[in-house]
Length: 130
Image (cartoon, rainbow, N blue to C red; front, top):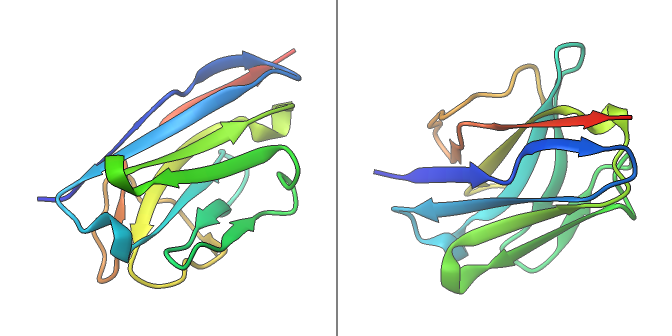
C-alpha cells in the first residue's frame, strides 16, 4: 500500500529553524503534487505549501519568505524548510500527496487518510516556544 512518513517535527524556539521531511512509498511520486497542511486546535486545516508536479510552488501568505518547500523525486521525499518560526507556526503538520491541485483548506486534517485522489501522512507536531 501507499505510505507517507513524516519526520523532523518537535520543539523549536521562536526565530529558529526546523526541517520537516516526508518520504513516500507505494506510489509514482512524479505524478503527484506534494504538500504540507497544518492544523492547530483553534484553526482549520490550512495548506502551508505545495510543490506541484509541474514544478510550480505555492505558499500560504503567512509563511511566504520564511518557509521553503522542495521535492527530491529520486528519493520520493518532500521537505519543508521552516525558518524564522513564530508561535503561530505551532501545529500538527501533515504531508499530502494528491493527484489534483490541493484545496487551500479543509475543515479538518485527515491523519493517514486515503481519499479518491490523495494520501495523507500521520502528522508531526511542531511546537514553537519563546
